[in-house]
Image 1 (cartoon, one colour):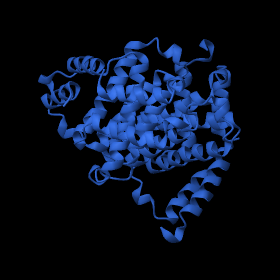
Image 2 (cartoon, rainbow over the protein chains, first blue to last red; image 1 turned 90 degrees about the vertical axis):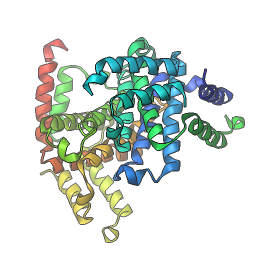
Image 3 (cartoon, rainbow over the protein chains, first blue to last red; image 1 turned 90 degrees about the horizontal axis):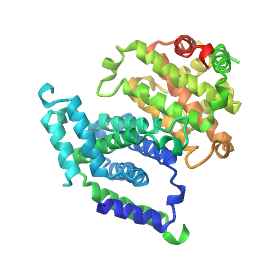
Image 4 (cartoon, each protein chain N blue to C red; image 1 turned 120 degrees about the vertical axis):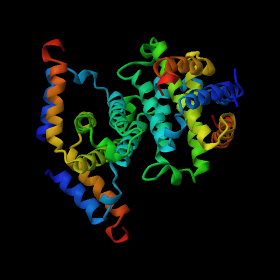
Length: 98
Length: 98
Length: 98
Length: 98
């Protein structure tokens, strides 16, 4: 288990929050956090938005934290599911065609 | 840099895709992938949705892959931004109050 | 009740679908449809995306249809809630300051 | 043009806001407002969420207002695109099969 996953699990276990983390609600949370990140780009170009480095860090971290919680709830290893998805994507988009 | 980040960077660099990965579009992509994950829970309970393990792995991996790309574009270290956000959250939600 | 609301209600009542339309799931559906609309703009400028008029019509209609269903479930009159929100927005953003 | 569309157009024209309403940003706004509505259901059942009637009215109105602006920008008639989409849906989901 990675350091990040250990820290996230410790955070929610210390607060006994795991009982509230129904996976449907976690999926809603990931979507909400993704849109808080997206909001930093609303009515802006990427260049303009990138000035807001602190908020970008926080909102991107929130997407990751809820995604890690979801992975843990479902018994998925983060690095494994990423590696497997990249293999699938590589079949769909071979290097030779790009 | 973690193995996952190395794999993701290799994947997009082999295809010369980094040039297309404007951060505003990456933020849109994270939101879209988050909702493809959420769609697996639409009209279902968590228990019903959890049966679809393969799709859950894929969609959660997509959220993570785009989030890692965003972090890399912005020069953020994943583990650092997660650790910093958990420290902020811990101040906001002390263990003693939960 | 507007013609659109009558048509939408007729559509779901003929299929006995109202029983499935739990409001939390309708809220998820509005978010999913909003992102299917947003997907038409992914990796594109507005000008490029606007060429896809048929899909834009369909996805925008889906956002509206689910929003109308939600309004009907909650007993809200569409024109009333829009008018009330515009009054609130007008207070927040007076003409003189824009 | 419906009363709601007239009111919305008047609101943005009085403030000269139409110039800022690039369609890609409107699509982002619809997604963001849809998720502010969804947030009212986070960690709740529909029954619990429905108690918050004022906020539900406001957030649903925001989804509608941005959707109406998008329709107006694209030259779509709201009632027409809803009617056309319901016809397509009716072919896909005939009454006899439901």
